Figure (tube, rainbow, N blue to C red):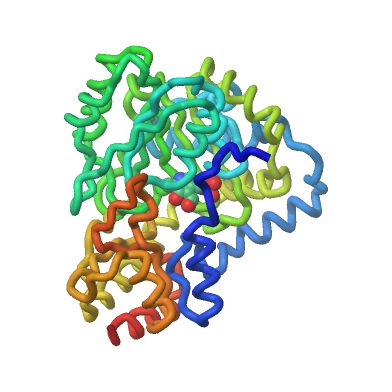
Length: 378
Ligand SMILES: Cc1ncc(COP(=O)(O)O)c(C=O)c1O
């Protein structure tokens, strides 16, 4: 059978996690927490089961959950989002992003994205006949070069995909990023945006600059979020997409025939959780402590820190330690020093190797302390 994505092999995430298991190494590679979730959320899952919330949910998601999301967005940004026409619950942010691309991209459409990039954007564009245009974030600050973006727009450019806070770079947007994107959208009235904001609550300084706060950007953006990231439940694969009603109508046509609807029991628990006590407010202080612990501990090592303003990832430059390429280096420290990381070149179309690896600090303090101990030996 002919492959539709012949260049896609086993992801580095699987490779590094398998290597970590094989060598009994501490796994700071893949982005998933290894600590318990809030016991209140656990109890609400049990309650949802006791209440027999186990059949199909409505196609766009449970209304109580969509209402809870609308309530959250009002508290957070002071904006009104219509739960009936502008919010769709998806199987993780990944499926929201896929549906948004499937709903909009046709043969020959160009889509601008920024490397190092999260891995689901490029193949989803190509599967729909689109052409990914990879621009690189500026090294070592990982900022967007907006002049280059302006110059890269052609009559075929249909969409820009942005990610704030950015995985893997750990950077966050300033107001200037929002105004540069606004200017571009003003100049190109049919340009669409996907704004991947799954780490919205993991920003350590300043406010999260969501595109939803700009009326202009909101009118042409699909904005995706992940319950997995916010409530430490990556395995639930639940997220949501906010978009204007006309765009949501098209998104739901894809969603309908892709999954129809997503896990009802967990949606019921999340709706209850978000509307009956502290929930997302707990996230920032929680990760602030983890970040401090990790950054402080890593000062004792020979690794040089790069941006770490958002997400639960930190990038480290290892050029003072080794000249090896980043894949070889990450594999070697997994085997010899028992700490698994992700080499950042894998997030680049051109495998750009700046001698940087990514560590995930969404781990128990004990796990982080052990990893730091091992890395101090290098
Ligand atoms: C930037 C980014 N977007 C999207 C996702 C996918 O989120 P989900 O697990 O909710 O599909 C991830 C997960 O790692 C991510 O890092």
